[in-house]
Length: 536
Ligand SMILES: *[C@@H]1O[C@H](CO)[C@@H](O)[C@H](O)[C@H]1NC(C)=O
Ligand SMILES: *[C@@H]1O[C@H](CO)[C@@H](O)[C@H](O)[C@H]1NC(C)=O
Ligand SMILES: *[C@@H]1O[C@H](CO)[C@@H](O)[C@H](O)[C@H]1NC(C)=O
Ligand SMILES: *[C@@H]1O[C@H](CO)[C@@H](O)[C@H](O)[C@H]1NC(C)=O
Ligand SMILES: *[C@@H]1O[C@H](CO)[C@@H](O)[C@H](O)[C@H]1NC(C)=O
Ligand SMILES: *[C@@H]1O[C@H](CO)[C@@H](O)[C@H](O)[C@H]1NC(C)=O
Image (cartoon, rainbow, N blue to C red; front, side, top):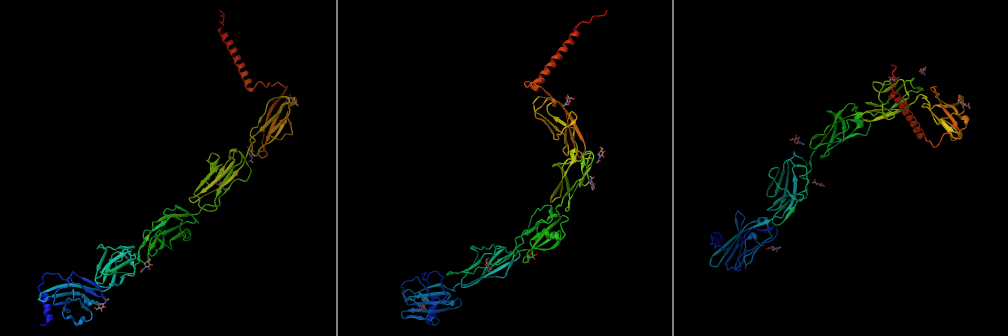
């Protein structure tokens, strides 16, 4: 047994007096650097200080320092030194194989031995931190995504980060499994926003932290709920209007749309279905349901919009009203007024006369479909503006006809004084209701005058103006004439007392009549009171 073997033996059986000569480990140092393993002793009295190395398989002598100086075991030549004052072991540059347990034995001249053990970890620097996905792209809810973060280095710890927030495994949908040189993050039923990140992973050891490049994975999703506008279209849509249906949906990648009427697919792609296309397909004549379906080529999901229903109807146009063209005579002619549209379906017909509803009556009869009306015979009150309004759910159009019913003249009235004083101005005004307006002529005492206007004026009355003034009204269309005679008497000046007003005259007349009546009453009364003498 040589000296070294003896020393080793001593180191393991030697009386360890309980003195602690090395600090707690481990000591970490990066590959390639130098490390100094310090002791807790100062200027010990020793014969030998021996450092040994144990990599877990075998124990190797490193170096010994004694009075004779430093003796280094061959494999460590040039890489170690021991401080003769305090026993510090300097080792380097470090190799990965330097990791392991280091033992020190301090043997005093009397043979007493102190020993200590400490672990040295040679850290490889962190490098090549990268994330990989098992899938190039994922489908929301369907895909289970496994991300692997790999790195080089030793004693690594991994962490996952989404943006700036740590990703926390929940042990169910999200699980993380760490190994020496990698970490796997498994996300079952991945969600759309989950990997938008960017996702980072970090690998850390005691000395340093390295971050991966940002990583994101496209997660395809949708279509979500499909919206259709308008959701509540009118029940009937006006033909050729700029009406259309459009669909929108959240989807990645963008959804493609197909359109259906009822269950029938239309040869239409795209998010907008125009009325023009509906009409081109010959649709819209009856009320039908329309839907769009959104399809996502990646997720293979198809979602239908709510159904909207409507029919298409032509607007009414070209409304004309036709009435009699012949001359109409009240009480004698009949009239038929009719109303048509050149296009559009007519659902409602409303007749108005002078803007008010026109009711049927004994003379006025509507056709069953109200497309015409007949008046037999026409009367003067039928004059006016006739309007027909044709309506359907998409519009209303109207047309008007003015009907002229000729009648009259009605009985003549003449206004003006019956008595005037000499030199007074006299104005007699004649009027008679008539269509067309009557022509007037005046006669004085049966003799035709040359006055042809409605008013007969005498600027200054003279006595011989007294007499009978006859106004004749003549309607050239009806051929009828009506007339009235007005009597005028011209009196001497003052004869018509200007102080007595008409009211006063009336008052006087009434007073006289009352007095007269009283007198007569009294006489009758008195007669009754007079005892009738009996003839017997
Ligand atoms: C590391 O130790 C070796 C030998 O012990 C020495 O030659 C070298 O200069 C040291 N390097 C540093 C950076 O201290
Ligand atoms: C991650 O997303 C960003 C922006 O959203 C994009 O520019 C980048 O190319 C993506 N990276 C990967 C790896 O998909
Ligand atoms: C997603 O999952 C559903 C139900 O498991 C399946 O029907 C569908 O085909 C899957 N989608 C894709 C794109 O694999
Ligand atoms: C109008 O009626 C009268 C009788 O009231 C009749 O004599 C006349 O012929 C009628 N005229 C027309 C044009 O019908
Ligand atoms: C009006 O005349 C048209 C055409 O002559 C006819 O068809 C219609 O029945 C008439 N209307 C009435 C209410 O008599
Ligand atoms: C007109 O007739 C009235 C009554 O008949 C008569 O008093 C008067 O003198 C006549 N006047 C003329 C101008 O003939």
